[in-house]
Every structure is written in C-alpha cells, then in structure tokens.
Image 1 (cartoon, one colour):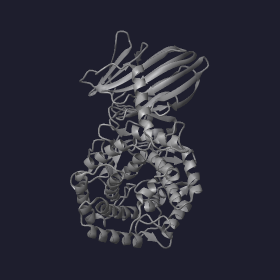
Image 2 (tube, one colour; image 1 turned 45 degrees about the horizontal axis):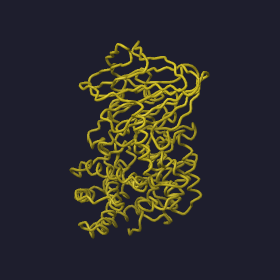
Image 3 (cartoon, one colour; image 1 turned 135 degrees about the vertical axis):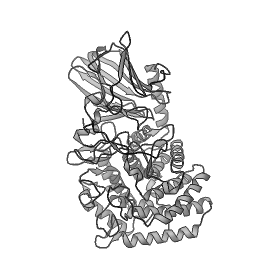
Image 4 (cartoon, helix red, strand yellow; image 1 turned 30 degrees about the vertical axis):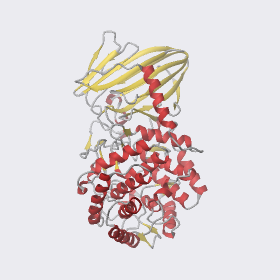
Length: 598
C-alpha cells in the first residue's frame, strides 16, 4: 500500500500503522524505538503483519471517531457490512492492541490472519495455544505477546489464522498484549470497557483545544497526532513512529525518525501552548532540559525517548525496504553531527516557554549560560546544517542565524525576566554574528540569502529568517529571498529543502518536496500581508493529507503520493502553526519574531 493508505493508533508509548485493507504492518513494542514485531511495512508478510477483513471482495472507508485516536474502518461486502475498530488503551500498566469487529448488516465471513515476528521480523517466537484455542502465547527472548481471541485460532506454518462469521448486532473483540517474557500479564483486558475509557480519554484531551475557526478540524487532528507521538513517561516527542520510509521510492535516503530532535522544540512548544496544551508543553520543556543537561561540548541534535545519547546506526539486511528502498536503518548517525542551529532552537524554546507562562526553571538558565559560553567558541565553525548533510561541513547560513537567535533570546531573557548574565557582551556577539551573516550569507548576484557562505544554492531553511526575528518580513532581502525560493526551489508550487542534485550532500540526488518547508512559505506570505496567496497554498497543503488527516514528511507531486516517515510530527506542527498564523489572534510567527534589534 501507499504510505498514505495507513492510519495511526497508539497509546502514547508506541504506535501501530493500520492499512486500508485492515492489515497492521508496523508496530514496535514496548516503545516507539523498540524492535518491531510487525515489520511487513519494510519487508514482506513473513516479517510480521495482522490483517482482519472480510474473506471475499470488499470496499473500505474509514475515519477516526471524532476527537479521538480510535480508528473505525467500515468494510462493505456482498453479504453485509462490518466495522473494525482499532485502538490502543492509554495509561495501562501493559500495552494492548485491540481490534473489535462489529456487525452492521447481514452476516459477513471474516478472516483474521497474522504473522508475529520479533526483532524487526527476524525472530520466530515459540508459540503455545490454549486448550480452547482462543489464547495464543508467543515468546522469544525478552518478549511475550499474547493474543486473546473470541473465536478458535489455528497456528499453522508459522501463521495464525481464524475464519468466523459476524452477524448484525454482534461484536467480537481481539486483544494482542505485549509484556516482558519473564513476567505474567498484569490483567486481562475488558475490550468494551477499554474502548469506553479510551474514547473518554481522547475526548477530554481534544476538548482542551482552544483553536476555533475554519481550520479547527485539521488543527485538532494534527494536535491529536502530536499527542500520539508523545512518549508519556518522559514527555519526549518522536519525529515519527517509523524508520526508513523513503524520501524517494527506491532511493537510499531512508532514516530512523523514532527519536526526539531538538530543532523541533520551539515550533512544537508554540503549537502546543497556543492551542491550550500547557501540560504537554511543560513536559516537553522538562524533557528538553534533562536531555541536554551535561557538558555543553557533548550536546547532541537528537536524543532517545528518555534522553538516551547513544543511537548507533545499523542496517538491517533481511528487510527488503519499502518498495525495495534500501537500506533499512535503525539508529541515526546524525546524532553525532555538529549542527549549530540546535543551540538557538534550545534557548529559543526555553525563552518561549517563559513567555508563554510556564514557570521559570533555575537549572534551565544555568544550563543556557553554559551552552552560550560554548556557542561563543564554536559558532564560527562549519557544521552539517539542520538537514544533516553527510558531506564535509560548511558554513551554513541558517546555522549562523540560529547562533544569532541563541544570543538574542539570552538577552531577552535577561531583559524580560531579570535573570543574570553578561548582557552587553551578548549584544556584541549578536551584532557580530548578524553582520557576518549579512555579509557572507547573502548573494547580491542571486539577490537572496543562500545555503552556505560563498555558495549560490538556495535553501528552504532561509524561509525561517523573518520567523526567527533575524530580519523583519518586509526587509527587501527577505522578500527577494522568498521570491527566489518560490521561483527556483519549488515543484508544483511546493517547496524543496534544497536542490539535492546540486547540493553535494553526500548522498545520491532525489527526494520529494518537504511539507514543513511549504508551510514555512505560507507563513512568510502571512507575515508579508499576502493573505490570499498564503491561504491558497495552505489549502493545497491541506489537500495532501490522507483520508484521516495525516501527513508524511514529504510529497511527490508527479506520482501524487506521500513520501518519508509517517506520520511526521514536523509536518503537523507546521500545519497547526500556519493555520493559526492565518486565522488566530495569537500568531506563532509573530510571537517568535517579536520586535528586535540587530
């Protein structure tokens, strides 16, 4: 299936992807970054899946129950119709995946068919079946999975099957539970009770959203998706629940996104706070402080869900890749790169948290002081850029701008909140960096800011210049850069990160348009007062969401399909912020780019 043919269910610790055909093809247990037990998404059915659907031909349409992460798929067959309701209860001591088959009309013959494999589809577990054949236990090493079925199961040729009928008015519930293999299950789940509690949880959560207006529905869906990508025990938010979904079909730009990136911090905080979710914003802020605590020289651009630092990158040879897009990677070597923009992102996020009313944090300010002292020494160095290029480091313009942001926000923290610091010295550094960027990062020939010093290539990250407050939106250099990107860095009106064929980024060229960058273009148009153009682009971007409102990282305008890891937090953060820039009183772009001096 195409990437957009999947929907997400999760319990704020991990998540599963459910296809239109009723097949769950991706699930990592017990955490987002754990090895997958269903990995057919990146391999073959032998690597793990679980499908529940009518035995014969059918059509399907689906939706989320309003204000929830409960997926309802309606299957229409010749003999009748059923719903399959998929969800994962939130807050349980163990992790459960529930699939309820509800008869709507007639009598439909259904099939449940699955292959359970641990360790990304490599490990075949030891299966035992209860006497009544309704409970299947699967054990391999540290992992235990138990399938409780309302109908007898058959385990043959390493595949678990059941064929059954559902009449109108009947409900049959299947429950798959994960636990550590050395422990017994803490409880047997009551599926009906769990459904009611799960629906109540998500509706309570979504009712807290303060965003109204014409874009309220897609904003709410994006916020629910962000909540689903939150690792509840720590407050960290993963970039996506998947790894190695390709940025170009058949290509090698396949990365593991099941970690927490610092550069998402500011925009994510603004999206959550402006929508009324201060509890989640506070948890994200606390995760951020814990993750980056330690020696400033060892600060990373990403961390594990609990702040883990070692994320070694490996290739999995037994998985053939999504549509033969190899390699399949776990871990991410970019975690060890120098990317100077994360210092500015971190300090800006903590400043915005204070502006938004989150209580001050003494340890956070001490940490920021240490980070600033280190940044003063290293901002002049070349780095790998926010795009994590796997080539020789360069002096990337956006990286220098974010170094400016770090000192600018430190000055504002001292001015607005009375925290101590060498403000005059920071002002001198801020001015020095600003002059450096304007002298070396701007090409008079192109009449635009460029990707790196001395180069002529454009880069979509430069759309963030007015939103960071480096220059005002009406500055001629900002306007000409925006127009250059619209003219030379778009495909079918959507924005590329950069021209991969010209950037020499250390990888073969080829990728889709980057959806977050396209939202940034709409934000620039908003800030320039070009409301109609911004709204037109935003509506086109909304049209790229799948049937249940989800977005991947990228999009292929030629093949008209989504690309990259899915669903992507950064894309949904962009959707939320642009919607509010267009329609809300509190506009994230203006909040971040408050009046400033160079």
